Image (cartoon, rainbow, N blue to C red; front, side, top):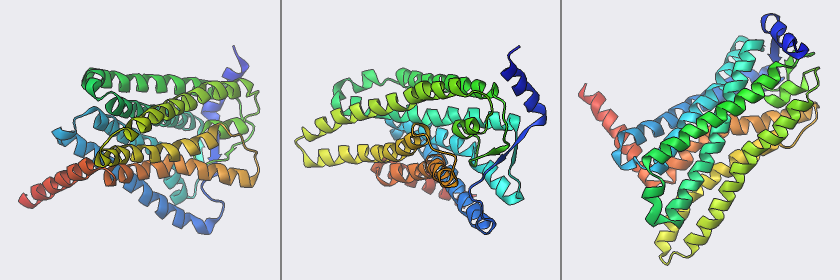
Length: 321
């Protein structure tokens, strides 16, 4: 039997990790707890509102809003894999996480994180078809095809996450302290005393493909989109198209910028580097899902109207009770 596999099996029952956390300074813990609790509540509430508004308004039952609702669901699950555990650790002043819980967190974190990446690429493709091939849009982006695209995204992300998690499971660890506030690939490889060359190669090629291929597809889509928009004779039409796509580009820039920094730009194990990695992780795990509802709703007239109708309906319902 593989020695790494045996090491992994032995550690499941006796080993636990200590998470570095968000800050070393005790006096900052209360402020961090309140800040991250606020961000988590706003993230879940904002994304849930988007899902409910889209689900209850038949005017938004279109491919663009179907993908937006899927992104909001993925963002809720993505944030929920890391922030609640970080909040519990701050509140209880305990940084421990069991070996099994760490691997489970890693698997779901990778699944929902990669889902965000694939959905952003799918949304870019949807905008490309809508703006560059409007006459074929309904045929190309049929309900069946949209459902297949999202299902394929879920299957692919699950397989990628499973591959990375299994490779981590084969490692043995010589340090209990993970230099991050959650279990992630880079920090776990840093504290392993096994040979991580296979893990690093898989992260470079498979992880690089998962990040860079969708990113390149988004860039190509938007080059075509911008070119098509500039050919629109109406200034109002150009403005509306840029407004719709601008919100998507803002999310893409923030999310991919920090993800590429975290996974494709290796860092050292120094204290400053750990703080930089933690800051980058906070950006794509907490800040981006927090901003998504504001970016998509405040810059989108249809979403603002749908949210207003949904909230007004709830107020009238509660008042009637």
